Image 1 (cartoon, rainbow, N blue to C red):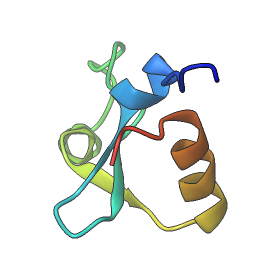
Image 2 (tube, helix red, strand yellow):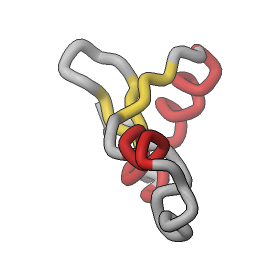
Image 3 (tube, rainbow, N blue to C red):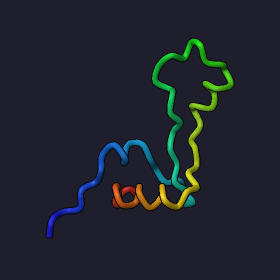
Image 4 (tube, rainbow, N blue to C red):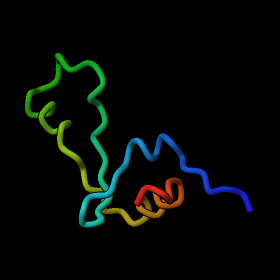
Length: 67
């Protein structure tokens, strides 16, 4: 039986909260921040809750050891 391997980029991008919700950071934080509004830049530092069941199922399949 082969080992179950974790998709490493998925494991770096997603995490589970204490109550079991799937969380991720928002995209667009990497560069070109000078022309973005301060309110937009402030939203990048907060984690985003993912509600879609299909996305939860896909992350669970790619990174089963994440939970």
